[in-house]
Image (tube, rainbow, N blue to C red; front, top):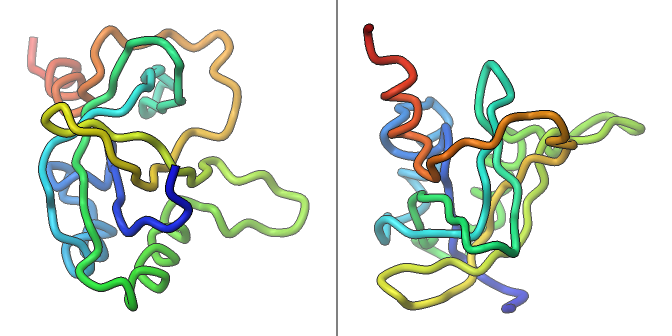
Length: 143
């Protein structure tokens, strides 16, 4: 994988459909390339689903972005790192970790940064869908 990439893959609260205030960093410093897929699995943590990587052929759906400027990338990604809780006190473990991952868009593979859940998913139920927006819409649909 590339060691320098200016792409970012988001699948949860940072997707445009969530209207999260932290999305302003993505909207300001990145351009949406479109929907994409990453090998991974969602788990239901109760208050919110979390995702971890997998080698299996299960995919999560998200949005692929590319930085508007390589010069601004480090500053912009640092703001998102802060939102994702990567900057913790000494001795604390961050809830998420940022890693490079292979992303598939229209059958073409590239490399992007992603934020994976950084704790055990043992005992958590796996979701049957890889699309968090659709899952939450179904879960929150009035009965």
